[in-house]
Length: 562
Image (cartoon, rainbow, N blue to C red; front, side):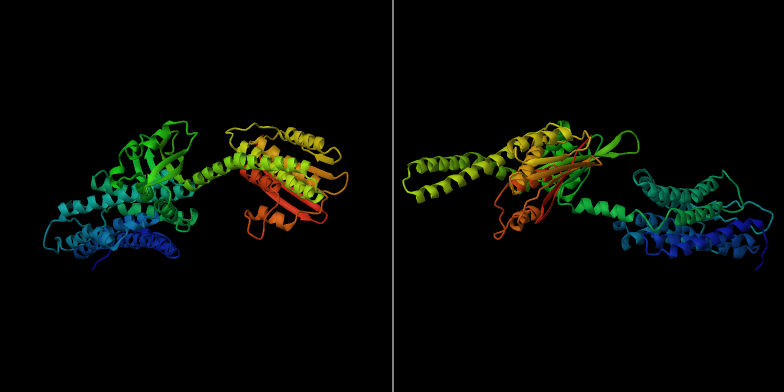
């Protein structure tokens, strides 16, 4: 076995060292998605470059033939490991079954067997028709001629590389900046060796050995850069892809993905059940054939978002949300249509509507009748005790009428589609003036900011503020109760604080408001503070109560806009 020294082998041994470094770096993150496949790529790429380097050093023809054939153990494994790596890296674990990996390995196995058993030192010429070996240091260029099995191997390898590259290109187009950087470097890493291989096989470049191996040097360097600079294998898109897939597949609400021409690209199992279609028939078809109601909704002004489907002989109500799917340019490639089941909300609205009518008409008429008959009976009663009891009936009926009127006014504001916007200082000034007029003996101190913040739902907010101030005055003892109103604006939100010097709100009154529900042991006797809380929360705000023996502080936080 004779050997020679040649500088041409230096890049090949350098590639082996770099590939070893990549394998070590990947081993440290071996539990990351795709890490093991990447380690296989590094190891067998290193073997490929090592055997090619030794082949250049050898001057013995038989040794060179053995090394050439041995290099195919690495050459055939790299493309398979590449596509396995990309599938794992992007989270497509479902494709990585043992059966599929075994099928991927069929052509590589045939390739290795064909290379080993080919002439010279073989029994056929199906892989190489003529294997030319460089056995001296003159820099001669070999003129190998390839058989049909070689071209099958080459086509298969390029197919696997194309599949993996496509998935990475998809990631570059759709992913966030970090994943784009990772995928871009990986694309360059795979294009470098295989671009050189294409040039070599097409005879556009002539070298003493396959320049694909030099491309592997660049590939290994790029992988090292990705591992240490772009947090490759520490943070990858696999969880992102799986999360999105699982989210769509397991959602209880229907989800439909359409392209710019309204062809159905994807829909989840819930959508299949709601629309009553076969998934295989729906995908690729027009949205109108799947759901004409969704098409009508897309063509409408979308003011009324609720659409109805009959599911299992029961009407289900859905709100639709359309999210454009950008394609990286000024146009959108389609949209994701998510249908949120709001059947319970719709039923609650219907129940509230019925209760509202009952409250406004039946109960109002009944209480008015009770109050009128109590006054009539009190005017004609001769017994003082009877008059006192009738007076209790009349007073309670009047209190019920007052509560009903308050609730009726606030319910009417919820029926309006749009509300007037009023600046903060104007709104608070009007409320304070109205309350001061109704309670002239009270002293109301006001500290308002110089702000022009506006609010949606003016009538609701006005009612809540008026109710809050009135409640504070009525529950502060003395002939001249003092109440303070302070407002501050922070980042388009206003905090309105009302302080009184009353005895504080009893726990049994406060608990139903702060807990959001009433129990048999906890009933609020009034609706004023509960309405305040209800109104503020309907405006996406919050209410905070601080109460004690020295008084109560109520803070309303309400979003606004300048």
